[in-house]
Length: 124
View 1 (cartoon, rainbow, N blue to C red):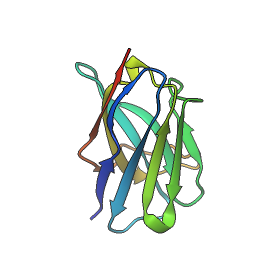
View 2: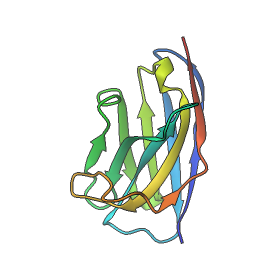
View 3: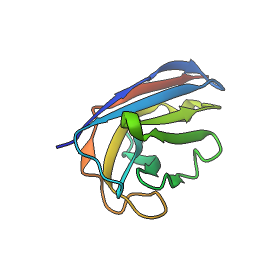
């Protein structure tokens, strides 16, 4: 069983930065991908970014590419999402997720494990 715990959410003004962390406990595999999804009020949950534990390959949604950076610390079983140039439309609850990963760094299927989420609010 894997448990994911997010931290680092908060409120920031447009143009600012935040870093989210996701700590994974339990057994992980190099074939896993771990990443972030977000859900804004009244909208469906959407993919943000992911990284493959073993290779470090990364994959981003087009809306965050160039502004967000995902990285991992295998020794600490922790994944980070550095968010820069934040926009009000980035406001959402951000969820950490883990599941089988593809060579590209994306998820092969819908993730098997989810965290509880952390709120990110960007004001204009």
